[in-house]
Every structure is written in structure tokens, then in C-alpha cells.
Length: 251
Ligand code: AMP
Image 1 (cartoon, protein in one colour):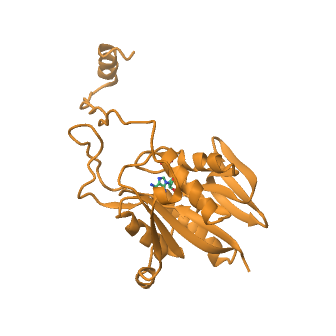
Image 2: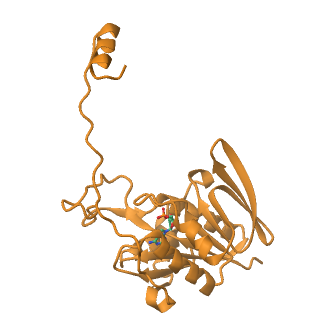
């Protein structure tokens, strides 16, 4: 019988299909009244942990999210996908990767987990830092951008996507794994499982309960939309194209 425990970090982000709008004061993006969902790479991380549980290689899957109260919806989604219980670390301020990493590292130790799964990056800030920082704080080995995960006794084999090929690592547990797009195709939560998830437990705590300091050394100065592209022109002939390119100094 498997004794391994997995913690999966799930972030609540603006849904990938929403057109992002910047606040007029450039302090951030508009989030009020905007559809949010679980970060797609976190869905892949949950799926992987749940599959290991279904193969009886992992005993328990715990989903954790840090952020406002609505993060509990994100945790419920993970529970409906098959996670066993949830932890909501309630914080009102928006957190950077290092603050989240501090929370995750504390929880990983507290819950005595063997595997910590994260998404390779969050689609809102595109930081791609939290997994690496958490592994650093814990001094655990890390397999980032995982496209295949295989448990081998007290080790985990991680195939990872690197420029121009694949790299295979063998990590001694406990370890941090971050999920890339091709790791799996996450399941949709079925209605019966959504109903069942309502009965699963979500523990709510504050960062202070874990003794974690959330002060950040980074402040956002300005958030701006990318510059608008000016309209193109149609040319009739190759000669016209060459003339136009010369005119705008491209050739
Ligand atoms: P990032 O480093 O911001 O690109 O995020 C990478 C991964 O870290 C995400 O896919 C999540 O697994 C995890 N993560 C980041 N922020 C949070 C958060 N507020 N709550 C839970 N997990 C998070």
C-alpha cells in the first residue's frame, strides 16, 4: 500500500479566454466581475497527482491555494478532480512567487509530503519561479517542465522538455515537480464528483499561522497594455512592396 503524500499548488487566475483589461491608473489589471479559473498548468499538476493516487502509488493528494476567499472555488475544482482535501491560505494582498514559495515550503514540511506538484507557470504573471524557489527553500531536488513522471521506489523519474529535446532526471524524494503542457490531459470534473467534492474538507489558515513572513521586496510600478499595432497596407505588385519597404527603411 502506497504511503506517499502529494501536495498540489493550485492558483486562481483570470480565465484564459478573458480579454485582459488594464486599470486606468496602471496599478494592475481589472479583476472585478471577471471570470476566474484554475491556472491551466495547475490542472495538469492536479491530474498527475490524482493519476498516481489512482495507480495506488500515492496515498493522499492535498490541494493548496493562497489568496482571497474565492480561492476555495479553485480548491473545490481540484477536489472534484480527485484531490482528497484542501488547504486555503487566506491572504488579501496579491502575492509574488517568493511569498507563495515560503508558504508552500512550510506546508510541505508540516504535511510531511513526499511530492510537491506545481504548474510550470501561472498564466497571469508568467513568473515561472514558484516551483524553483520552493525547491530552493526546502533544499529538495526539482524536476521542472515535466512531460513525464514515473515513481520508482523512493525516487521519481522526470522527463523534462528542454530546448531541442528531452532531459531525464531521477530525483530522490521528497521532490518538487512542475507540470508542463504535455504531461497529461486533465479530466473534466463530473457532476457526481463535483457533488462529492462539496463534502471534502478545506482547512482555512492564515500565513501567520504558519509563521510565514509575506513582506515583499518587489513592488509593481506600472502595468501597461502592449502598444497597438498600426494597420497594414495592401500592395498590388512586388515592385510596390519593395518600394514600400524602402520607404519605411526596412531594406
Ligand atoms: P508562477 O511562478 O507564478 O508562474 O507560478 C507557478 C506555479 O506556482 C503555479 O502553477 C502554481 O502551481 C503555484 N502558485 C503560484 N501562485 C500560487 C498561489 N497563489 N496559490 C497556489 N499556488 C500558486
